[in-house]
Length: 231
Image 1 (cartoon, rainbow, N blue to C red):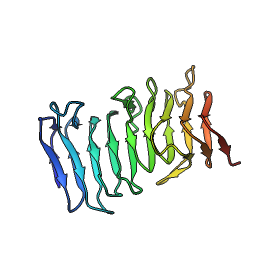
Image 2: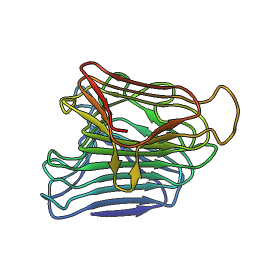
Image 3: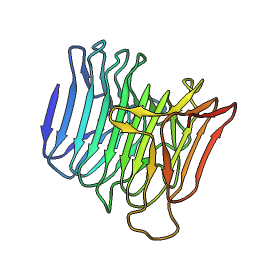
């Protein structure tokens, strides 16, 4: 299923994009892509973006402006979910990359506006095997992204913080490692303006660090059970 339009908004109650044969690709040459999934009562804004093609399915969203995404779900497949904003940020509601090894890739790297933010305070934003985050001015900077992961990697290049709170059922072990081509966690302050951004990652269970974690500001890694750093 492919949509390629000037600007895309899916927010009509009961509407959906579903594929049981292959990938779903949504591209926008306009300013905004908004994909909204079911809300708590299932009545309003009940649009879902889903695919259930086992093993190969994927969802790709590419926006030239702000990408507001929620209800993205590869269901039982192991396919990845990828969201890219070319000129702005990504506002994350709920994204699920299957139950058998799917990864999520979020990229918003425009210097002045590339931020990845939490759009559903207190609820899990991303459920996946691995999560790779690339941003310019913060990742969960003001309000941490809540996750349910096995492996995390992130880079933020200009200003702001990286804040991840892994609270889900996959939280038996969280590894800071490699997802796709992204290795470890790096928070750089290219603007060189104090206060420098920090890294704060917490896990409800053990935390293992197998790749570098670097920041011009503080680094706080919290494990409620145990922490292992492989030097």
